Image (cartoon, rainbow, N blue to C red):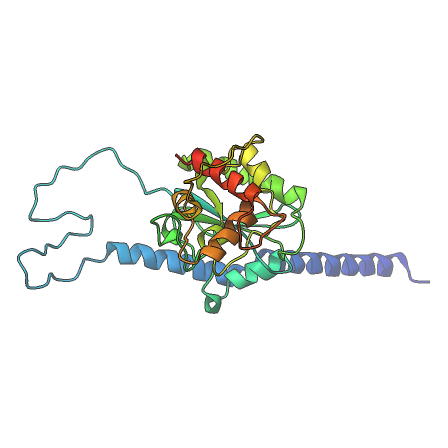
Length: 290
């Protein structure tokens, strides 16, 4: 039998070991993304430095003028207005990650070699991770077009949902998305119709979010538009291609545009042809855009 002094010392030693392990574990978890967070901060600082750099000397032309670091031109009178702020994002583009976990997606967005990112990532359990300031330009849209906009990255917030594209989205995930969208819409005054999907703006390249995404529910909450229960038959001179263009779709590849429209609004059938029912839906959405 060990005496009380030895037992007491042994207990203190064991407790100390356990405490050390807990502290080490917590520190490892806390600093999991310390290195990439440092790179992120460095990139933000570089952006600020670029903004503050003076512009290069003008070309040898009397029509070219140089502004100073605050954007002031010395060839014009200057009176500073007091009414301004930063330019706000005017669209939200929703994606699914096509990956298998939240951690996998975060790792993808913290590797410089991938050249892809998003402002927010939402896990299956509803956990929301912000990865970029809303005012900064993330690389989520890629080559895309919506209406006359050809650089969606510059005008939108990108939200990635942890989903492989082959399964329904969880209620916890959608509820977190709705809370986030409510904040974004109120803060940046984003129009209802400007909540769209990646496949909407890149119909030849992307399929996200998949046909499992609840666009109707989002529209009912004020994020995007949906067609009415009662649908009218389009007039004889109704032009589907023109209607798609007016809504915003890129119709240079018409079959791809049809599929993208149907992935968003029909979902049960994404064949590259319009049925009579599809045309009624398209006509109804078209009327809402006019």
